[in-house]
Image (cartoon, rainbow, N blue to C red; front, side, top):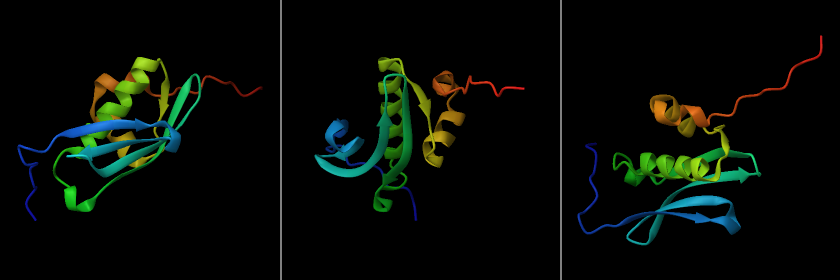
Length: 109
């Protein structure tokens, strides 16, 4: 199936729905995907991301990933992407790799 493009009249927004601990990507006001998160003062974990399969190929997953990572950057948070999509997206975009959580604990000898 060929990739569908968004109609020119569709407006894409990414909204932090804090009470649900997730970011939602909306097209023309309709929620078509989300990224769940767990956030502390120093770290944000993205365990699960979903985009409506009918919307595949429209760049909505990338729009969502970029928005959640920019939010983490603005908050000064490290990112632990346990969601395979967010992890792969970060790996393909070196400008976000500095956000990746680094375990700095040491195991005693």
